[in-house]
Length: 390
Ligand SMILES: C[S@@+](CC[C@H](N)C(=O)[O-])C[C@H]1O[C@@H](n2cnc3c(N)ncnc32)[C@H](O)[C@@H]1O
Image (tube, rainbow, N blue to C red; front, side, top):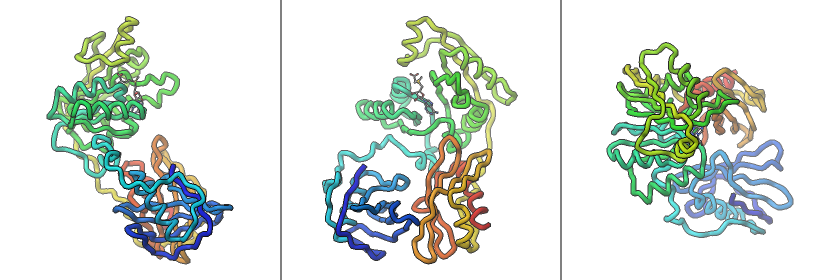
């Protein structure tokens, strides 16, 4: 993580600029040793630098708003040191120019990419937990007109897949590091041809962590087009029985089951199970209904009435739990006499999100960006709006 240790430090007045870097305002935590946040704008991004007091001052990045690539952060930190006439005692920051070879990989997307503007021009197929990516790469090469979205939470597998996408020159795969249990809610209705769930982790001791669930199946039925399929392939008899039970609960679509069926490409796991002569089960769910689009009328807008400082103070360090998730107010900062900043964690228990809210003259707004448009975040927003307005 890039950082600088500084001494002989002159406080800045805000706003101020150094070259192309703008320092917009500072937010102070009540304990000055815990550090201040410096709102910074550079190359079209807004983010916080954290400035911590101590025998020497430490300047580092803020985890929540950290910009990418790292070059932006490093450049902003060096600009801040110059601007405050500080002496750099030690640092792990170099002043190298932007490295155009290290640009983020085109195929690697963030959840915001899908939440803000889901690609709908061509048929979509989704592979969940692609592991070695053999199946995903094979399918993408064989179906160049179809967009494949691969979900994985294991970083080395993601890196491996990204390398292969370049080597094989494939331009119809998008990779996402996100929990598959929460992804389908961002997908429009009736556009997915296939969802592959091949050899999911069986989670025999923690069944709530399984990808397949009643809620997942309901969302699959919504996003699949008529005739589209959800394909579960597993060597786990336990998981197979659990899936049968889940797929059997009343709904309008149908499913069928096969045992030891060969498919065109065999994954590393399948190779291993076949050598051990284990049974392999396929449970295929076929969608037979057209679904309405989900309700998109909810927004992250706050009620337009003034918030008083006492109400904000009352939220400090509280956790508000509901069945869909929670809000936890982590820290309150002062920007000036009128303006405050709140750092909070919110959303689903499985994938909480950290975010900031600025209250300027009694009016709140998320900073620097809106939270991801998940249903849990939208519910958390409504709760926050209620809490802020007492
Ligand atoms: C047993 S491996 C199977 C990999 C591959 N499908 C195959 O057949 O070789 C299961 C994969 O699912 C991924 N995984 C587990 N839970 C996940 C989740 N909630 N969302 C996305 N991927 C997940 C794991 O990281 C792991 O790579």
